[in-house]
Length: 199
Image (cartoon, rainbow, N blue to C red; front, side):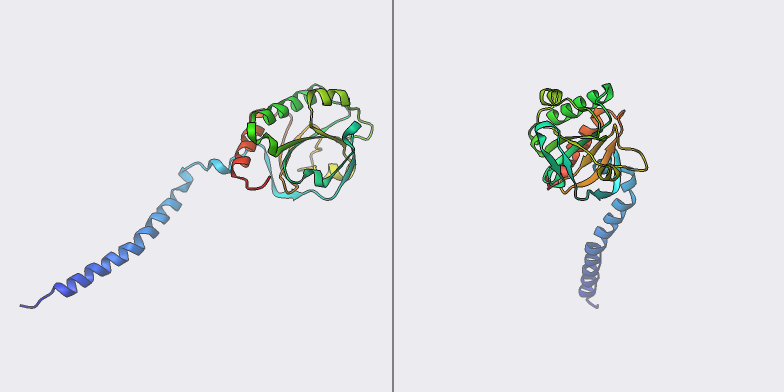
C-alpha cells in the first residue's frame, strides 16, 4: 500500500497558500463593488465646491479705518470666511455677517484657525467702522479692486452678496449664496478642520 500522505499534505498546503493570497483580493473586490451603497460623508459639501481650487493671485487693497492695507498674505495661514459686500451693508448683509460670526463662535477651540474678511465691492461703498468694531471685532475690512472681484467670480456670477471659503494656502475653494443656511458653512468648516493638516 502506497503512502499518499506527503502529496495530500502538499496539496493542502498549496490550497492554504492560495487562500491566503486570494481571499484578501476577493474581500477587497467585494468592498469596492459595494462602496456605492455606503454614503461617503467625508466628500459631502453643502456649499458649491470650486474645482479645481483657485489660487488667489497677488493683491494689495486699501483697508477701512484702522485696518491699514490688506494683502494676499493676510489670507495665508488660516482658513478665511470671506463676504463680498455691495454698495452698503443692507439687511441681508447684516444677517449674513451675523451668521458667519455665529459659525466662528460655534467652532470653539478651532475658532483660532479661522479669520473673517469683509470685502467692499465698490470704490464708493460705505462702511461704518464703528459698526464693525462693535459687532464684528477682529474682522478684516478692505475695498476690493476689480482684479480681485474677478478672481471671486464663479460661473459668471458676480460675487457680491456671497460668502466664500479660502483655505490656508490662499486657494478659493467654496462658495455659499446669501440664502444658504448657516448650518451649511458650519458643517463644511467643521469637517474641513477635522481632516485638514494645514491652518
